[in-house]
Image (cartoon, rainbow, N blue to C red; front, side, top):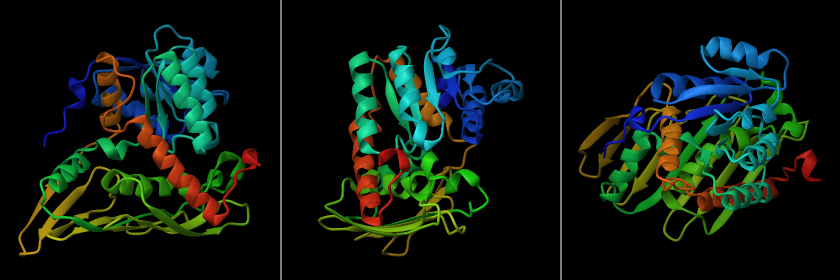
Length: 331
């Protein structure tokens, strides 16, 4: 299956809220890997937006999010703020009539997600979660391989996302919704949902750090005929691989499974083949999906519908409940 070239998507004009590392990656994807352009960047930190646009080579710097969403040259807004602050900027952009791409995890919890989605539907604007993995070439191809019956009926899925982030201060701040689950664990959770759907039962164990954020979480999702075993930690770098095993073979996804990479299909008869999905950046595929959706008059992605974003948020809420993870602004 061929993934459409992101540069073939219609050109739109982007504004970005937040000027951290992930925003820089999206700016690079927009400028160098799509037909679209970056026209505005907003940061509440003095000087940060100015430095951002100077580095990007295009766009207007603003010191408030309001200025970005009210810029008449902005068609769509990418929300790249910290997890605790996704829903308010998203609502701000929606109220201004802008189409919105919200970085994963979509919000802190299901209640916030429901509020943002309801606002977008009422306003009639396009809304999408920026779970880039769902749109990457290797994931599109492995879904096709599963649909063709290459590995038979799925029996198990295993996925790990472990990074050594103990030096990253924001990860330890509960008021920023720090910790492993929303930042890292969302990838294996969303991947299991992509392949297997909503689990019938969830079992989770986790270890909270001194500040109250989660340092490590292990999860088992139960399905009628299969299981997903998932793990995340911010304390050490792990394999960051995934394996899907079926009655006729298995798919092994290389490090890092959620980013542009390769996978190998190995059949029970010993035959195998490998798909190379390595590309530069990777964010351009989700950005192109937004541009196509807007051009086609859609309000959400067919590849990652909003109802599925809600399902993923509900799964993570259940995991958090089981490990006792509550953020300060939820008390």
